[in-house]
Amino acid sequence: MMPAVLQAQDLVKTYGTGETGFTALDGVNLAIGAGESVAVVGKSGSGKSTLMHLLALLDAPTSGSVLLHGAPTAAMTARELNRVRNSSFGFVFQQFFLTPGQTVLENVVLPLKIAGVGKADRRRRGLAVLERLDMAEKAHSRAIDLSGGQKQRVAIARALVNDPAVIFADEPTGNLDSVTGAVVQDILFDLHRDRGITLVVVTHDAELAAQCERQVHLRDGRILQSPVPARPGPEEGPTGAGDGVAIGAVGGGVR
Ligand code: ADP
Ligand code: MG
Image (cartoon, rainbow, N blue to C red; front, side):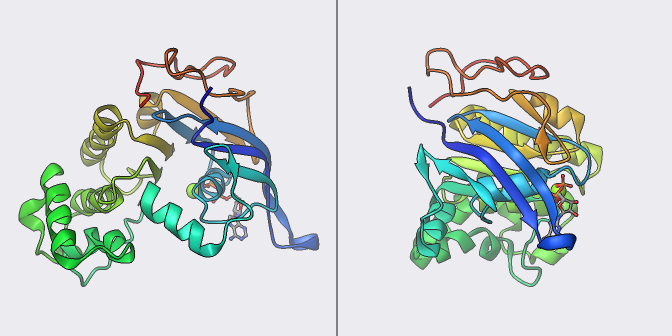
């Protein structure tokens, strides 16, 4: 059986220490299989963003571990972590996090620049991904001049430009009106279906969550139901087995 792309084992995250310490995650176990779409849902403050940050190797747990393709990540150097994040992960956030004064294209190719890709290649790949998201005509506009929906498309383009295996999206529709949010949602799920990209989506949006193959409910830093213990074989496809509130798996999506 192939190991999960990402696996959380007994994750605990405490912010601060002593009396002022706050335990945001309290023993989370979760496996995310290749090509799965997983929604992390729960009330504000339940630990969703904290869990996503730990899975995305943006932050380290207080205890417990995150396995990447079955291998522990705790001993990885900052340089190795950067390389994994830059080459395998794409990030989409509620606040877009674009550099306002830069052009759309400059924003999109940033991960390529970090990865050391040459200028001509960056431009070619940046324009290709903008084309795919129907944003090519805005390539030379400044990010600050875009609407919210356009900004989120640019953020998705930037998340995609390195051809990531996993996209982490934290409230990707949180700052968008419902029509624009639906467009962004469709883009994410098209990518998931067509390219087999694994999606980890933190969301309050019930419609967005319902489109994921599996929902993980957090409350006070704990998962409400027992998680799927291990990833099913590729022939079975991802299932929500053992997950009381999971939406049943729809189709394969396994690469
Ligand atoms: P969610 O994304 O579900 O709203 P978070 O993971 O952002 O929840 O936060 C979970 C809890 O941890 C919240 O109570 C929040 O105030 C606290 N928290 C998050 N980040 C920090 C931090 N850097 N320092 C202190 N407390 C934090
Ligand atoms: Mg959050």
